[in-house]
Length: 103
Image (cartoon, rainbow, N blue to C red; front, side, top):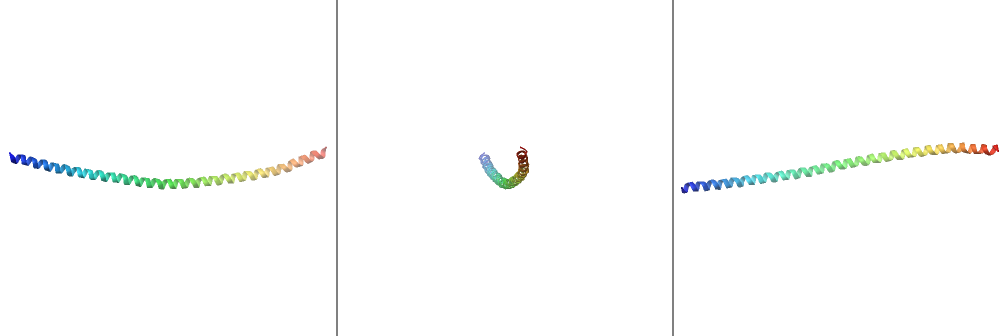
C-alpha cells in the first residue's frame, strides 16, 4: 500500500513538473507573440510615417503647382484687362474729342 501511495505521489510530482513545463512554454510563447505584435506595430508605424511623408511631399508639390497656375492665370487676366483698358481708353478719348469738337 505504501508503494502505491509512493507511486501516486511520484505521478503527482511528475504531473506537477509537466504542468510547470507546459506553463513555462506557454508563457514563453505568449511573450514571443507579444514581442512579434510589438515589432509588427513598430514596423507598421514606421511604414505609415514613410507613406505620410511621401503623401505630404506630393501634396505640397501639387499645392505649389496649383498656386503657380493660379498666379500665371491671374497675370494673364491682368494683362488682358490692361490691354482692354488701353484699347477702351483710346476709344473713350476719341469719343470725348468728337463730342467736344461737335459743339
